[in-house]
Length: 204
Image (cartoon, rainbow, N blue to C red; front, side, top):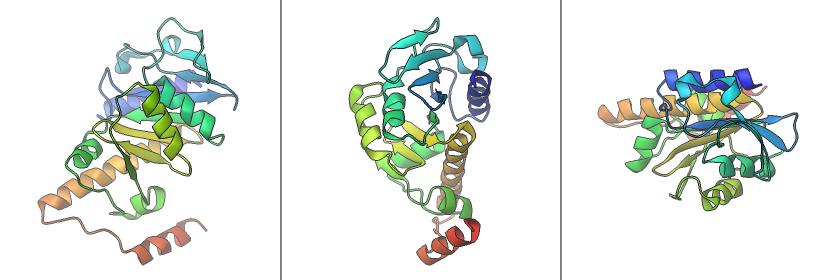
């Protein structure tokens, strides 16, 4: 589990979805009340399995030589609210974050976005790393694959790391496509009735 978490962070860094100092991820251990989370202050592209921190959902550090990510409150709050979630990823996706700062919505612009992330909610800005942000995300994560944090980034939740990563990647691809289309006159979204058809076709 730890090796996959390290791989996840290095893959996100390679794709430019996080910087060496930004972004974090965690996995639930054994479906219970403990998680492995990335540390604070360790360059993500050079992360090693021994750098990961094991902690309880109550915030108590159980093992690790580093402090847990400053966003641990957001992670633990999601796990407490969502028993079906086993992985949480927080990134600073540049196109998604940039479009949101500019007041642009990322709608169902491609079939993949329409299927995986049909409606993306943007949460109001709250200071990173605080209990307030953790509570806000926890109160709005029900039934969602991802949330956009205003002027901050994206948080995704999945049954495993691959599902959480897929949501991050699809959202950023949708943001890039929206940005390119806006340069050419505007982004046209897929009509609502076609979105419903996509859901029926691909969820058979």
